[in-house]
Image (tube, rainbow, N blue to C red):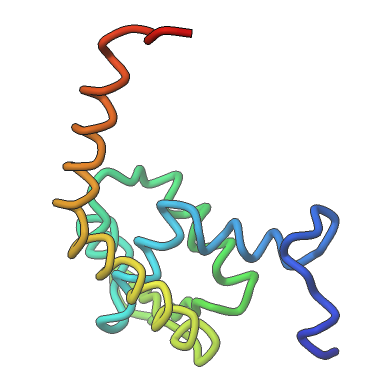
Amino acid sequence: MTTSTFDVFDRTCRSRSALENISGKWGALTLGALGDGPLRFNRLRRRVVGISEKMLTQTLRNLQRDGMVYRRASPANPPTVTYGLTPLGTEITTQVTAVLDVIARLTPDVLDARHHYDTRNCAGPGPT
């Protein structure tokens, strides 16, 4: 199937669920954290500060289902589970990481814009 078959702007397009899985806060941060290499579950949870165990589990399952993340269980005592990026996940994470980097770099500008907006719009309604 060619990529031209899918249109993320069409609300019925099946590509929307993959977009939701990677563009949400937890999906993007999980992919970004795995961009540095495979991690065990608890280390990944500590890296993605604020995510609950339940949400991380759900996020990882969604990303696995979409073919972006793999899960590797090692038969040790106790068993260890490691998560990492598949080739598809690596390609997508390159783009996600670029967005995360731009957000971090431009946060001062965003904060200035918010302050300007809030100052202008909190004064009450202007003349109509």
